[in-house]
Image 1 (cartoon, rainbow, N blue to C red):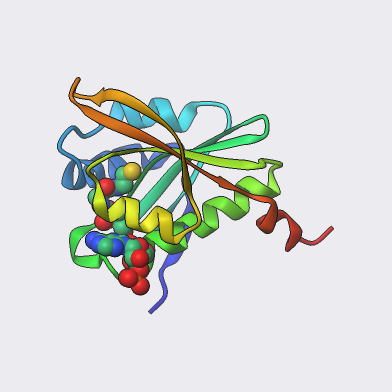
Image 2: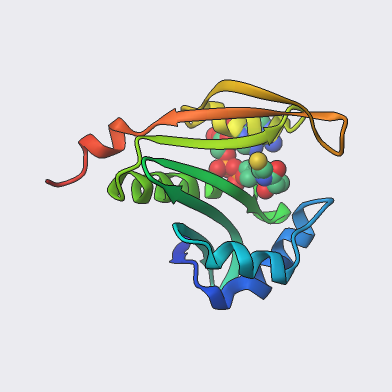
Length: 154
Ligand SMILES: CC(C)(COP(=O)(O)OP(=O)(O)OC[C@H]1O[C@@H](n2cnc3c(N)ncnc32)[C@H](O)[C@@H]1OP(=O)(O)O)[C@@H](O)C(=O)NCCC(=O)NCCS
């Protein structure tokens, strides 16, 4: 069954923090999520099926750039195309809102995420040395959004 992709709302902060806690060693708490959801240009989607959350993507758009702030899929739901669907929805929204570039940061040792982003057309454009915990590099990846723009109705 394909999941529902539900636009994120400020009221999702506690839910998102709970999901983040499951998927990241240094999770963002409810206050942090609420702050991110309240930022101008913040948007994203919750993937749910059978009324249960399965994952989400949180992004921000500013001028002609969109950025993935975080993306996760719960462990039992992985390798079923959910992250791909979330990224697609987020990229289409960014393109519709006028962004020409989609950017993100990913830990240099996150092989699953790197494989996903490569598969989804992202390419490295930079590296932040010792960005995570003072020891692990972050790679900056970019995807151009012209394709999404060109398929949108005038
Ligand atoms: C990274 C993550 C979001 C991927 O979610 P997912 O729903 O399993 O990804 P998808 O099923 O959409 O994968 C799409 C493609 O990405 C690649 N991919 C995804 N996970 C992979 C893995 N563990 N190993 C190798 N390739 C992988 C594959 O090319 C895959 O296509 P395929 O299954 O047909 O081979 C998920 O593993 C996760 O939540 N990890 C923990 C949080 C995290 O690291 N988030 C990213 C922070 S930048």
